[in-house]
Length: 234
Image 1 (cartoon, helix red, strand yellow):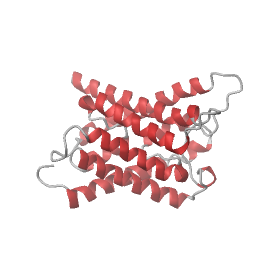
Image 2 (cartoon, helix red, strand yellow):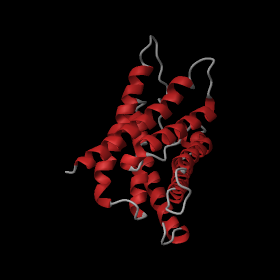
Image 3 (spheres, one colour):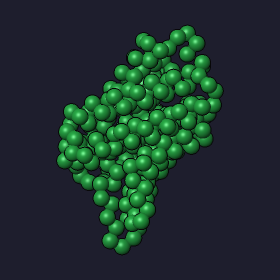
Image 4 (cartoon, rainbow, N blue to C red):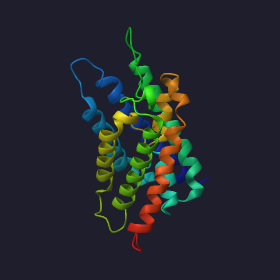
């Protein structure tokens, strides 16, 4: 095993840890704190900022995926070696679990702490807006597909250099602004898995959708990009 491989796995672990802790932490801690009220816009921005900061800090090491669906989508688009998927996905899931674990310890560190939904994803009665399973499935598929198109386009050789991380972070912010009311926004199986293990029991039973839909969406986005937008200088 090459030493650089461990560095990539470590970068993906740290990046996904930060995304989960920062993004979900804004919802569990700041949004629920009396008088702060960062709300939908604040939580959405927090998720975008974790990706922007993580991408610029760790992207040069691992590519800055921080998301199993992104890794799979990049492989489908020919931008990432399929042989590296397993290591990346395991690192990302472990990072998401670690981030959620640290958040849980912080959130429960005061008397009478109530973690509520713990930023978990859900549908039906567990959707913030009470949207059903099919609406949640469609939302997650479409949002992740667009996310992959933005990732592929903003990091292509012909794209403006140095701005990929910003475009990706802003895209994730917009995705959250749209889809938090529907599913509490996943588009990332690792981000969903971590909080589900520490949150309400229903989250684990509904976790399948937040693996299936983002992965399907990522592959669809990769196919669309390759068919319609990419060219030889990609």
